[in-house]
Image (cartoon, rainbow, N blue to C red):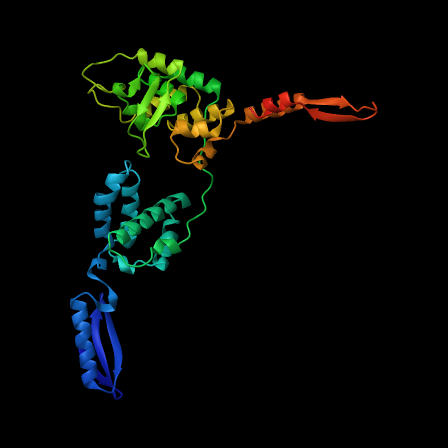
Length: 357
């Protein structure tokens, strides 16, 4: 740090945040020296440019705090989702201080990521970054507005929806091996998530009242699922080991972690392609909707917090649409006018009820 004279004016020269700064103060050398001393003191006390010590945190350091003190505690799938996002964010922002991350810098991140991944993947990373800054603000480690709020997310295509027709369900169950079949039956008849089925314990199965009690769910809310006759019979036929609390377990007595290979084999034998285990949940919801069950009931069975989340399951298969249109054709009845000269069409109340089922 120094003061110097140029063309009759006094300047101060110092370094801040790895950058060299030169400022003209005026004709008075003593004033220039006084200003420089004040800046030196502020930098040492971390008050310069009104940046507090709590904000002098590098992104990579805060990302570790975020993982340990928030993500791991509040997100069961943090390793699959949050950790993956933070790794790619650290590549771009890791050496930056939180105070240096601006909407403009984030736009650069968007442009770079779009070269290698899909818009939905970029949006997941932006959502993670937004959550991190929200935590930083709450924890008093960042002052100001969340910079991600000024960044527009990409428009995403409609989510992937795939479900089985009834004949495909029969084929799949026929080709499941002995330990996979009861798991698939539960998924198709309860809409339970894979993790909920894998971690199901006998204490959660209430045969007396015909209910499955889910205490640990994705949204951390308890859920009760009625057992139909097939689910009840399937569970009753499973051999219990009094030493093992889980309904489904491997040779070590621990819950299944991944049955992807067995499930893929069963799908292949059934000529069912482009189908994941989670699509059994789609099948459960879609078949209910096609059977005339109202969306709010489907929402409760799936454990969705809002009806909006359930609307994506309200689609119908093409075959079901064709049958509905054919039903409409049969329900329109030509009726003669009182004069007997003209014809009009009339849809009876009974036919209308059958249309909306």
